[in-house]
Amino acid sequence: MGEARNENATRLVSADEISKHRSLDDLWLVVDGIVYDLSNFAKEHPGGAQVLLQHAGRDATAAYAEVHSPSLIKTSLPASSHIGVLDRATITEEWARPPPRAHGPPQRRPEKPPLDSLISARDFEVAAEASFSPKAWAFVSSAATDCLTKERNRSAYSEIVLRPRVLRDVSRVDISTTMLGHRIAAPIFCAPTSMGRIFHPEGERELGRGCQRVGIPQCVSTSCSYPLPEVMDAVEEEQMVANGSSLIPVFFQLYVDKDRRKSEALLRMVRKRGVKAVLLTIDAPVIGKREADERVKSDESLRAPMSGAQPKNDKKGGSLGRLMGSFIDASLTWEDIAWLRKSAPGLPIVLKGIQTAMDAVKAMEAGVDAIYITNHGGRSLDTAPATILVLLELQKCCPEVFDRMEVYVDGGITRGTDIFKALCLGAKAVGIGRGFLFALNYGKEGVEQFVNILTDELVTTMQMCGVTSLDQVHPGLLHTGAVDYLVPGSGEHPYAKWKPKINSKL
Image (tube, rainbow, N blue to C red; front, side, top):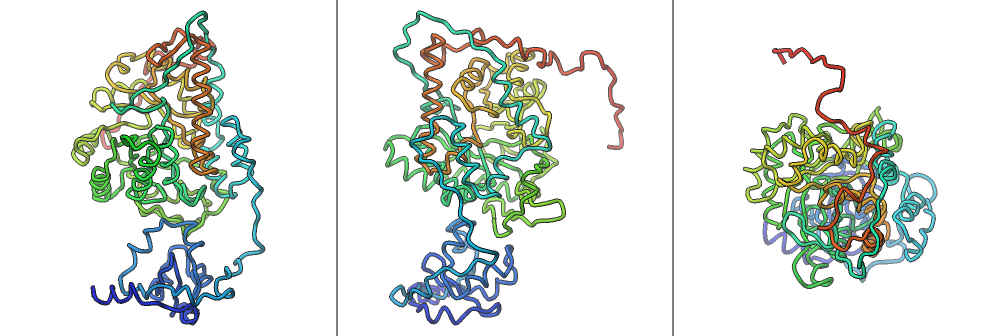
């Protein structure tokens, strides 16, 4: 077996020979210069056999790279499928020409505006809407049902008023801070997002490179379009180029699999690769109804390598989140925190999805290292509270949590003033999700510029408010009267006092 594999690894295969294998029962193609025999796999291909037949006998590297991580084909096919190496000397112009599209003429996307013309986070969003594919835009922009929470996440910040302090020496400002004991350049982190390759060929690998450049953490999702080791490889390479010093931390977001053994294996790999914390998602036991995403069919050849999930369009539509989230364990409870500690010994645990003071107190009592206030960008439960209001609720009902653990928040943050307001209300750092995907449209350079725009705005806001370091921020720099009526004072309704009758059979 080993000798056969070594022989195949060096065998040169001509383009003419490859082109003879173009049927469903005899199907060869080339990916990254390696010739594969997919005859036994074609009928089982999750994306259908047609896409393989379209590239049969040809170089399929470009089509493969649009939806799969580089390592997938190398690790998922048996050694017997490796025929050899493409003999590049035999390539002809005709053979190298891409096959005709299966459906209609080529679709040309609008040109993106130059990166140096973008001067706000909103500019990145406008550029993304104009240039993303219809499915990519539907996926990133969609939110649950009527999108009210998504909009309120953003609009709630505008209702909170700044109270500047003047005649202070603000000639020097320091925005560095720490997350879970790790020094970072700014109180911002890249929130976990899924399927980065539909926005950029290098997906989360490129996000990681950009984050290393600006010294902020990246949180990699279970639904990442690359295996974690490939993201870490890119991050470590960029770190050596960017600063050559210590690695900016990478965190891992966990969706717990119904088969706990899969999650346990994933956590073992995460620890081995040097991830610095586990962010356990708790606000999405099921996937919210995202109608804009449902209306556009998914590419069924997509695959999330760590969860193994693949979309299959159905009568409900084509939402990537719903179709690829069926593996998530909806039975997760507070008692499972002990399981997570056992499965990821030594790693800090952050509960991602706190939306009430009651659950913040429970998290504190459970002894987790941090909580993350988020409603999934409005993508889970519509009419859930805006996240900045949850920060206010914690300050009102359980201020002690801020002394016992770190608190993070995301949702609707598009300006440096938004970041400042969250910090004044007790957030240690803020996460941004969609904004980083919009910036990914321009690669790591876009990520770098996006973060620099926000940090410039944050510095300006601090200077205008008489603040020169993050340990000086406090709630007195804000007036929240316009939203205080929306902040609950307890876990009870103020006047409706009835309680559910507990069914002992449940």
